[in-house]
Every structure is written in structure tokens, then in C-alpha cells.
Image (tube, rainbow over all chains, first blue to last red; front, side, top):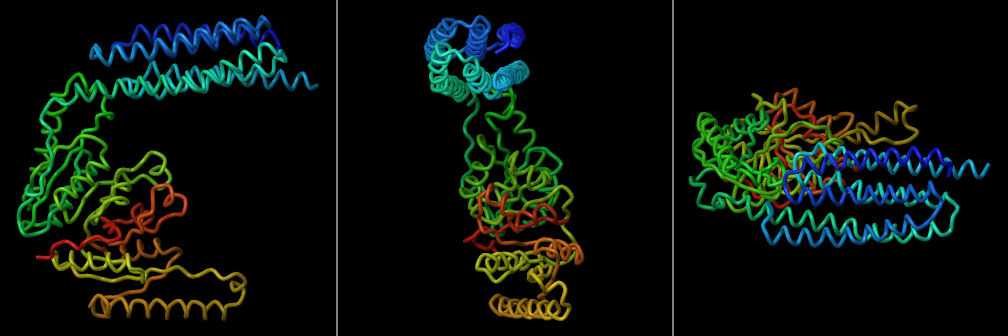
Length: 88
Length: 402
């Protein structure tokens, strides 16, 4: 894959990350924040994957896997907490 | 050469993934509340990431592809699970916080009177207002009308914050509708419902033991209705009692009630319902068999063969009408055979010609997808008729005729 393509994709993904941050700031309910957080992690996973294409090394993807795993557990725990506490 | 192709595919996959992510994120930013946002977020957490990971095969590096494959499988499994758990939590919170007022369930004794019992759906729209007028007209002062409004727990944003405001709005709408029906000349009661409009309306119709369900239709075409979901079509397809669908330009005409028959058991039931309605309303009844010429390949060039076929069609239609009239006890001069491009087109054109008050058709009870694909007769009549259309499901009972 040509470096230019990966570089442009990396820039695009970074912009998406910023937009995701904006969405996080705009959300009012706890569950909305959990959802946006889930989306943010997905964007970071995509970002790391593109970075690995750009640098042509695989360990960024491994990092993405660890991040996805943590995020999944975190989402379940947060949702469980919100359901018990009644949200806010 | 191969390398260029692989590069282009890789760039395309990356672009597609990022485009999906952008669209999804835009949705998350713009949607008003969590149930809507979940749809958009699902696009980012699922397909967008998966497509970007898929692009790894074009890097030609075994280690990257292996790692990416692991992440691919992991995301494939966990993204729907995470989304589902968030949705479930949001639903539980809404259920816990959204039931501000007491549950208002319809009871069978709500509708009194010996005459016809009619349930009409009202949401404040123009079509719903016309549906009210039609319901009042069909029911008359001997029966009673129940006006129902269904508050959807998912339709309006921020419902959980102000259940009281929603209740007030529902009460205001129903009070307005009730006044309208009483002005139309029928006694009216109101029913407040909450949940999925189609299911709630059909259930309420069953609980109230309603003879007729009246719904307004926005008059979406068949394809749009199948894609976006039409409440009126869904109610007409699933209800146990006859459903009157009032289209956007539909007026109760000055002419007779037109019942479409095709010799099937379903259409006979529909004709019986039409007869009961006529008995109550005294508008006159016309039993119509609409048919289209049967296409026979090779005959278009031979006028004599074509004429013979047309005559055969005509004779068949007359015979069918004679049998049906005898079965229903309708005089032979109240029957008509009409011919057109299609059965539905012939019927709709004839109804317009005689300025029919109502068109009554039987429904074979096909699902929404099947009728959209195969084209159901009742669906075409629904979308084209100039007057309210009564769809009679299989096994429906005729309304009380007193």
C-alpha cells in the first residue's frame, strides 16, 4: 500500500477522533457517553491499524486488539453500573 | 500491474471504511437521543472498523494480516454485544422512568351501545382527522367510536425526561379528536396507548371487540411504504377485524359501496362485510368483479382469437358474478363486471366512475415483504382508490348491522 494513501487515511482518522471528542462533550446522559466512548475506541482501533499499514509493522494492530478487549469489558461494566444506579 | 491493482483495492477499502466511520459519527453528533444514536454508532464500531482491518490483506505482510485477522474476529463478536447491552440498558431506564401516569388499558365495556363499535387511530395529522370524520360517518349515533392515540416510547426524543408533558399532549390530542367525532354525530370515548403503534392498535381492537378499525394513510407508494413501513398497511395486513384505510385524498363518495369479488372465500367474506355496512348505512351495494385480460402469447396478431378470448373472459366473469350474487342474496342488477389493465386498476377506475362511498376488498393476509414483491391486489387498491378502502382479513366477522 502506498505511503501517501495511508498518510491521508491517518489524517482523516485523526479528524474523526476530534469529531468523536466533540460528540463526547455534547452528550448529556451517562449512557450516551458510554456509547460515544465505544465509538471513540473504535476510531482509535482504526487509527492504530492504519498506523501499522503506514509504518509496515504489526505491533500497532496488537495494541489495537488489547484496546478493543479493554474497551469491551469497560463498556459492559459501565452499562451494568448505569443500569444499577439508574443513570443520570 | 498486480501491485497497482492491490494498491487500488487497499486504498478503496481504507476510503470506504473511513467514509462509513464519518457517516456514523455524523449520525452520532446529529441524532437527538440514544436509540437513534445507537444506529449510527453501530456503523462505526462494526462495518467501518472491519473494512479498515480488511485492507490489511493488501499490505502483503503476513504478521500484519495475522494480527488484523485476530482483531477482525474480536470486533465481529464484541461490537454487536456492546451495542446490544447499551440498548438494553437504555430501554430499561426508559421503561423505569417513562411510565409517569397510570397505564390506560382499554376494556371491552368501554364501548357501549348496540350499534357498531369502531376504533379509530388519531395522531393529530390531516389524514388522521379525515379518518375521524369517516369513523363518525360509518358508526353513526347508534354505535360508539373509541379514539386511540399511541405514544411511541421510541419515536419522540427525550421522552424519559418529561413523561408528564407527553401525557398532557396525548390527552390534548384525544380531547380534540373526541370533539371532532361527536361533532360528526357519533358517541366517542378515548383510549391512551403506549408502544408499537401497529401491535397496540390491533390489540386494543381485540380488547374492545371492535367491529371496525379506521386508520389514516399518508398515501405513500407501495415501495416507499415497504421500505419505511406504513402503519396503515401493517394494520390492514395483520388485524383480525375489517380495517378502513383512509387515504390522503379519500372522501366518502355519494355512490354505492363497491365490494370486489373474485370467487375466492376471502372476497365472499369481504362482500358479506360490505352488505352489513350497507344495511347500516343504506348507501346501496354493488358487487363488482374486476378482471384483466389474460395474456396469451401469439394472439395479439390474430384479432379473431383475441376477440374470442375476450368473450370467454366476459362469460367467465358473468358466471362468477351470478354465482356470487346467488350466494350473497344480492339482486343480479347490483352486480357488474369491469375490465382493465389490471384487476386493481379496473376496480379503482370503476369506483371513481360511480363515485363509490367505500371500496371493500378481501385481503389474503400476505406479509409486507411478500405483498411488496408480488404486488398484492389490496395494496394497489389502497394506494390508488379515491375513497376509503375497507380491507377485510380472512375470517373477519361482519359488523353488527342493527
